[in-house]
Length: 114
Image (tube, rainbow, N blue to C red):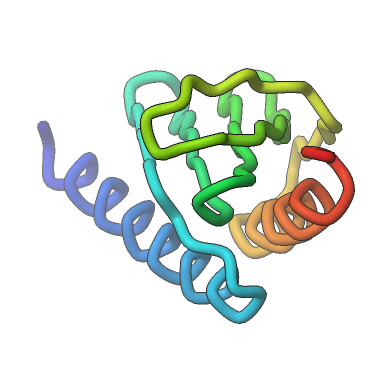
């Protein structure tokens, strides 16, 4: 890993912290996060509450942000993700992607998992 790779990884993690703080303002918790710098910076994040969650996925190669939702009967219940929406964001900066992710999460938890 080069120094540039290290810096990019740190930038991503800072963005995730910022996104988690924004989601918290809507009483949305982040439960899992995955990041793959070598796959064009693609990432996936699961957020929501204990019984209803959204999965936000950024495809860094295709520049697509997607949202799926699932209900959970208990903490060990398996997810049954239902696709809700996606948006092509080629040319978008990190701030625009974060805003779209928050919008997707709020809408997805309000409407999508029902």
